[in-house]
Each structure stands twice: as C-alpha cells, then as structure tokens.
Length: 314
Image (cartoon, rainbow, N blue to C red; front, side, top):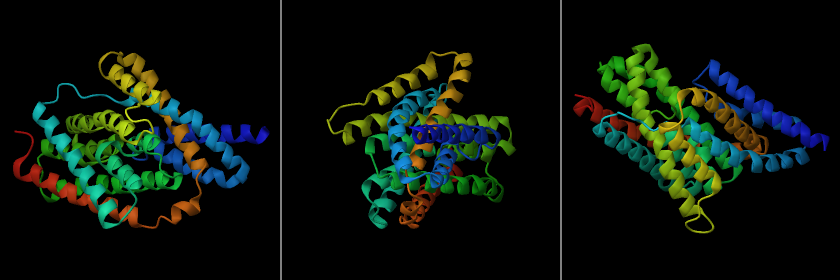
C-alpha cells in the first residue's frame, strides 16, 4: 500500500514540476517534460510499482483528456481564406508524415498515425488525445511525443533564419509559423522577436490547426473503437469543453481552468512515462525521427512556396 502511494505522489510531482518548468521556459512543452520526468523517475522504483502506474494511468487519462478541452480555443474573426489554407497545410503535414512513416520506413500504422497527428495539429497534446483511442504500445506513444518535440524545436530554430535569408514579409512569416510549427509554444518562440502583431497573427493560424483535434478525435474514436460509432465519454467531454472554452466561458474562468487542465494532462503523461521502459524506446531506433523529419520538410517546402510565391495575405 505504501509503495502505491509513493507511485501516485511521484507521478503527481512529475506532472506539476513539468508544468512549472514549461511556464518559465515555454519551448519545452509541459506534456513532453512530464513524459520525460516520468521515464526518469520510474528507474527508482521496482517493477511491481511500475505496474501500479498503469492503474494510475487508467484514472488520470480520461480526466486529463476531458479537462484539456479548456486549452482549445477555436479561432474567431480570422479570414475564411486563411482558415482554408491553414487546414490545407495541416492536411499536407498529416499526409506527408504518414506516408513517410508507414510507406517509406514501414512503421506500423498506429505509430504513423500518432506522428502524423502530432505534426499536423498540436504536437504532444494531439498525440496524447488520439493515443487514448488508437491504443498504441506505451513505447510507441512515448517515442511519438519525443520525436515530434525534437522536430518541432528544430523548426522553431530554422524559421527565423529563413525569414532573414528570404526577406519574408512579417505577415507571411506569421502565417508560415502558424501553419507549420507543431506546438503553440514553439509558434510564440519563433515569432516573438518580430513583435506582438506577428505573434498574434501566427497564433490565430495555429488556432485553426489546434481546433482540428476535435475533428480528428471524433473520427478516430469511430474508426478505432471496438464498438463502431462509439465515442468515449472523455472525448465527448473534451469536445464539449472545447466549445465552451471558445464561445461561452469568460476569460476569468478560463485563466483559472487552463492551468489546472494542463497540470491534469501533465500528470497523465507522467503516468505514461512511469510505466514505460527506456530500453523499449531505444529499440524503436531512429526510423520514427527520420520519417517525421522527412515528412515535415516535404510539407513545409510546399507551404513555404505557397507563402513566398503567392502569399495568404494581401
């Protein structure tokens, strides 16, 4: 009984610590940090304790996903043309990453699906949500989050350099960041040196992609469900809370609810990390990373050409 409490406390501490660190350094996503902390912490516990982490996960996962809907903000007021192009960019990212993962590198379809969703929508949070439906192996889940975070950080470092080399107008640069980078925190990092308006425009475009998680979660729940057309309660709660956070709940409530929801989801990722073996992740080798890089680069090249040659802004 005492060991079970120790596991529970360790998982909660990992999740809260990950959230606090992400607040001070946004490029490191709270969910990614929680997963890493969980993997590191499980080395200090016995195998029996690690098995108990699976029970903790069965509780934290549905709660974390349901509450994370508070972090979804559907874009309002963005021109319809930009919405269409942002959705097209997400589609290109999904198809490109899935193609390289499943067809070129012969990764299994579930891991390929996670990599594609993480690249096209919103990084670690998208992976965590669809993983609850796809039900991959824990090492596949962990690998997908680690890979997508690495690729996303690379993109956030490269894009400011490209903006100077090609003298990209700021409004087009904002679109490029919002349409191709994996996580909102990375979008902010890549655009912050260019001013508040660039950050705002980029996050509006990113918001369109983030909103797609609602559609992906719904479709995945239907396709991967053991009982076809069954939507788990926590996915339904996630979708409802996403709508409320976008159109009904006041900002004062959201400012309280969003940190709580992020912490809850971080604890979920810490539970996953606690129950996975680092050796199992190492066996995945570099194929998922190379596939995710290749898919992102190809899709990015197409979006980049659209921005440079045509440009979504007038």
